[in-house]
Length: 186
Image (cartoon, rainbow, N blue to C red; front, side):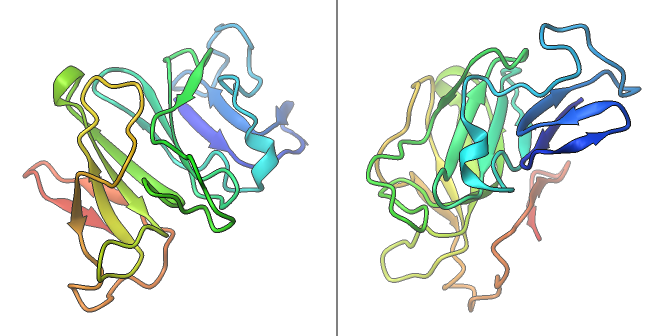
């Protein structure tokens, strides 16, 4: 079980509450993985960005842990190994502004990863990225393949909020893929 915690809190129930990702067995006991019951950062300074960094997690079909960051100052998407020993940013953040936006992404609330290797694709719920002629709060697709980092505009706007009449107002969106292959967004 992977649990993200974006805010350091006082010790509760015998567990220190630091910024990062906790790895637990299904019964919430210690996994025995190096680092014990403490939080794992993958080498990323999550604490610099407030209580939404890290935000949501997804275990991809490649067994990597994908970590979203909805904060403005640290917005993005990271990929970590299953033991959280190392994490790297996989959506380029060059030129990120004070609102979390750059030429590739904005603040990311959720993510779904499909495929592996050359077929890997990322679907993100993005608060800030504005396609040409549109507005924010969109579902963006990145055909990243086996590349370590994706730079430039998303491969496609999977859901265009403007074209749908700006129905999404809250940018803390969550996305899910149903068994019939459709996607749902709250």
